[in-house]
Length: 361
Image 1 (cartoon, rainbow, N blue to C red):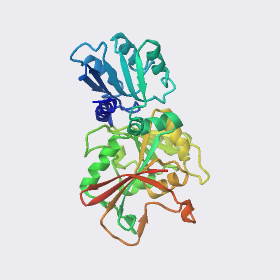
Image 2: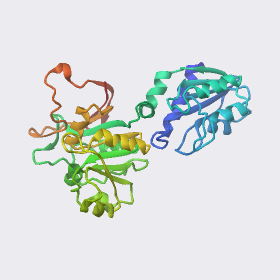
Image 3: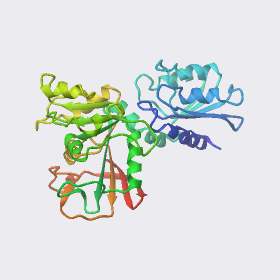
């Protein structure tokens, strides 16, 4: 096996941390000695040992003189765990092959330089594109200071997310709902507008898949959301934040706060609603590295119009309803040259539905 083969193995290990390590990146590590894999590990949960440490501790023989394959540059700073480079040096690993450099300014190239200065041979850039793609959320968060934004919606074949009367449950299949719950578990926060809460009364939790409940974020400019909503009835299930333009002086502010939700005041945008970019910046400051937007049409339209989205997941059900509510409203696009362009990454089949997973370009 060559360096790329071992890095592929490290990548497959790293993916096991999906949904459990954020805002840390997913990382996999493989230790090879005399042409044989003697250990492997991955970052299993936020706050837990990093992949390199797990691999070193689980080795079936002495790792001295071995080669360590790791998908991301080993850390060189004290965080929730000690620096990984210390253990690499201490255990006399001879060579380190790295998939990609870490964008975290506390690490970027410093770990590599420290290893080199300690007499360890270092090779970088092996399957770099694959390693960066694996952690697209982490790299976006580190390099922009904003969360990675995913828009998800289910629509009929003729592009409607609800009938003309607003009825939308359920457009997609049970299999698609399970997919969406898995998607929720992979994000740090899930965001909807007040209208979606009032109309659909969702719980916004992970129930049909394995994983943690994300932070629930409700955009409610006027604080008119009902306290009878399901998310207030299970407030202990997941942390809940309401973003508004109202201040603590507003009577509704304290009433909703007493229900167990956190209320955050965000500046208004030019239309008098919550400024979503400022909200996303606020979430990033709280180490929220990814946000899944599930509606409604007004929120989706605003995010797309202001070029805040990174990923679009569209569930297309084999149904036609004619007149109804569109997923995306007016983006002020008057010619095809100005259309939002997408790069389709995957096309999946779940039940009778087709799921198109794309990135905004």
